Length: 226
Image 1 (spheres, one colour):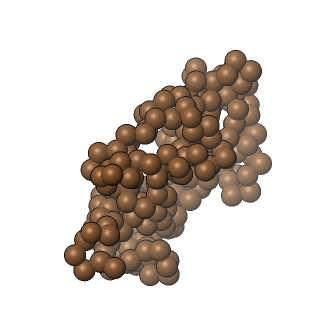
Image 2 (tube, rainbow, N blue to C red):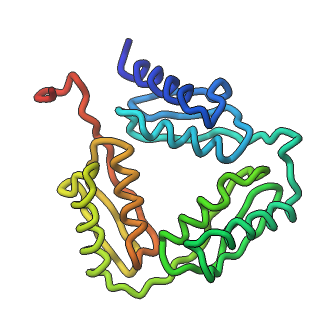
């Protein structure tokens, strides 16, 4: 069994293991460590869970998620109902007190806009509406306002990296322009890459994170590996 086929089987097993989605509707292809997902799921949340499941499989270099959301008739909601549900979810989230998030929905696709004070709040808004029934997809267009200096942001991110056991801080270069952060370098896995991105985006003053990190997992046949 070649490396891609072995990785494909591991991804399929991980998808089947995740009880939050119906893996029999998801098709998996692998080429040079890049995983492509196709097929249908019944909710936006299931699509997201499939993506997260794959990201935690060792050896995955990148992921292309082409899964379609096909809502069961019992889950279809009007756009006005979805707007009301989304607004309520945001209002009940303690991390978004006095938020300035705007909500619109077109044919089941939810768009978040407006301004918040941190990237953490922007991501929290997305999490707050992810599991709403009837959502086909989410576009998070919220803008983050920043007041921190570029040097302060860079220092805070690098310090946070050093505190994370999963992150090899020496392999990541952090560049900051205004509130925009660019991460480059090499990490050992998709979970490490995702943790680096989340850590940077959760840092005060960050407006946007550009993820240019490359995944280079250590394979058993790599010279010098254990």
